[in-house]
Amino acid sequence: MAKNKGLFEGLIAELSRLPGVGRKSAQRLVFALMSLPEERAKRLGQAIIDARTSLQPCQRCHNATSQPLCEICDNPRRDSSRILVVEDPGALVQIERSGGYRGLYHVLGGVLSPLDADHANAPGLASLRQRLAQSDGEVKEVILATSPTLEGEATALFVTREIRSYGVEITRIAYGLPVGMELEFADEVSLIKSIEGRRII
Ligand SMILES: [Zn+2]
Image 1: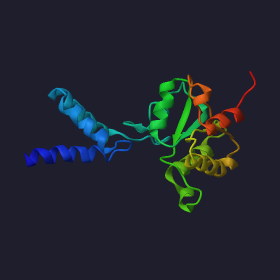
Image 2: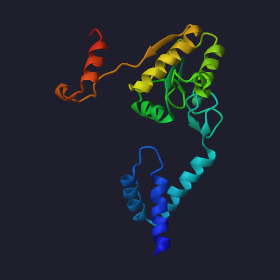
Image 3: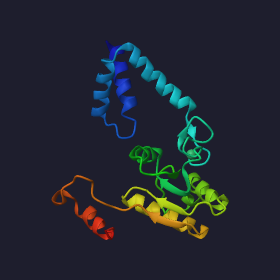
Image 4: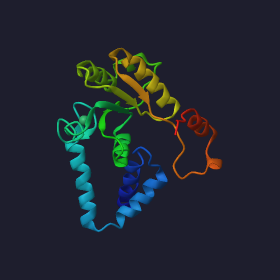
């Protein structure tokens, strides 16, 4: 019994270390895993091991890939005049799922703090500067798509300052309201930002 409890608690502890997974969610996941057919549980375990051993950051944009270049960087049909900067690969996956963007990406690997001098040398930022320096005029626009949080805003400002000298157009994604939301339920900040970001129709 003690051993069973140890396995159960151990798995909950491991899962709840993952970002966005609290103890309650971890518990629910463990119960869901327990009810999986053994074959599926094995496939899941193997998929985690395979991903962990073969995925690495893309040499150009830091997206997760099993090749030196990710399939976006390696796709000649993508628009190489645009680089969209995100905090992490999760944001990239989400934008790709929308299907509305055909340019390239750059993953910073987290938010940057202007107060921390070391961040000027953060690997994600250093490699973005290098990409721009070597682009030979091919890159025309860098789109800053960091989160609309305090840290995301600070990161966007910081990146802007660091890449301004490369002569590319620097844009920031618009703030808006979620599609399908009724205005009376929107928070004040989103509402004001959506008015500031209005466009001519
Ligand atoms: Zn890439």
